[in-house]
Amino acid sequence: MKAYVVAGLLAALGSTIAIAAKSPEENLANELDGWVAGEPVQCIPLRRITASHAMGDTMLFKVRSSIKYRTPTVGCPAQRVGITLMTNPGSTNLCKGDVVGMWDLANDIQEDSCQVGEFTPYTRKKD
Image 1 (cartoon, helix red, strand yellow):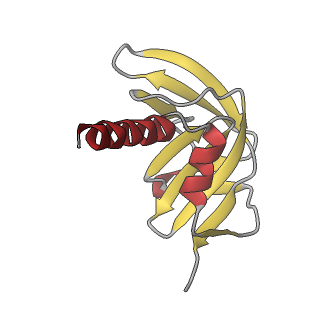
Image 2: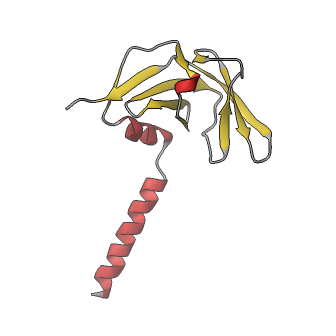
């Protein structure tokens, strides 16, 4: 009986490690599973963005629970906890070619910056 418990614990631990070690591409695929791409747009309204995630050289912006925008980036490192994306305070839209800063608000320093590309909208698949 002990062998089964140990084997079960090892299997569970192996699964946890596999989930934690996903690549940015795998995380992106999981985020977009069940979503359908639309025609790319040049800009998205900043006031409607509710969340953002950096995954390798791609960013996802959530606008509503039913719409996400994917954009390729140039120079963006993977976003980590505590880093906030900052844009020009006078901007109402985030557009292709705009540069976003990555700020560590706790230490009040700019970590990095990068440029965004076209925004591909994704909507939930309809059953």
